[in-house]
Image (cartoon, rainbow, N blue to C red; front, side, top):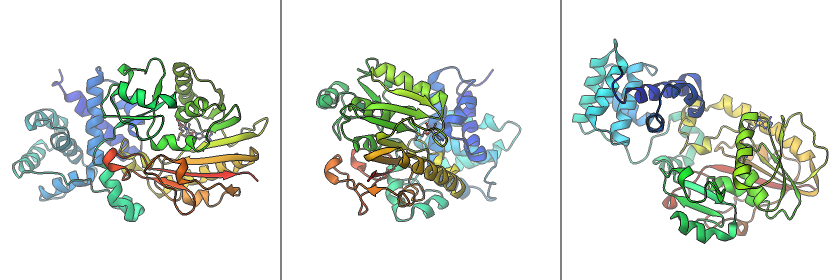
Length: 410
Ligand SMILES: C[S@@+](CC[C@H](N)C(=O)[O-])C[C@H]1O[C@@H](n2cnc3c(N)ncnc32)[C@H](O)[C@@H]1O
């Protein structure tokens, strides 16, 4: 018989192992690591422990190293167990005795005494975490002078943002949901809300979408029945926005499984789109579009608040692979516009290789983004592009990192 709470800790350990050793996302790792856990509360606990351990890993490791005479190897199981034990006591307010009872059995037949000693020394010495996470050196090197602001935005998991089907009802929905609005059609709720039980979910009055993720579709304005191609559309947050704004939407994605979620979202909200399962690198449209939204696959480092695994599994190789795919998709999309048609390119990445550098190579006329098209608090850069990062709007709860650019076909 397992000690109560032990399966969740074992699963947290497997999640971390899958991220660090196999380069999987927390979501991918979840399908096997969480499979044997029965209740949703325990699955949520395992995810929370793994997320906090990954978010604060550099600082947790520094604490561990300060309490051992011999540095534990980076991939030692005892280090990973200590990381999840410390993440619980320092971030999730789990009492130390419960952390010990569910942590040490993970090292059965291994260095349990060592782990107990390190944990007790740190607890007796009043171990604490800094105000914001220290990012892994390779990440701070890449993000340069933006690192401190982003790290500040990373200190807490983010609030829950929703986008409304009826933009005109923003004040009404902010009041009904007990949230605040930072833009028309947007409501922000405290994190931890149970989405499916919230007012309006079943009727499809809104869908979950980070405020930054709602900006690309806003930059295409009202559709008035014109045709838009949502290229790389699943699970469909932007498809729903475009359909709600009066566009006739073709939603294309290569992933059948993710398109199922898109179809479910269309059903729930009562919005319409033509759904196409295809690889955008080989697909050919039968006619040109008035607008194209390319929300390209990317390293997703801009979502590090919600997915701290990106801090540990993304490096130059993944960035270069994505940049190559993004270039291929951009050159195809540029061919499929009617004269005067507009292309919006977006990535939820903080890497210039996937943003500014890709946009700089597009052979269409730049259609600069203006501050008066954006919600309060946002401004385009000097190129007329928009960059957001998790350090922005911090007092209001922050937002994801995105790069967004727009062009017109001559
Ligand atoms: C950033 S996500 C899109 C999110 C979506 N636009 C939304 O707002 O919900 C990128 C998508 O690109 C899709 N994708 C990746 N490579 C593709 C390709 N070659 N052709 C079409 N879709 C692709 C992935 O399946 C994934 O759903």
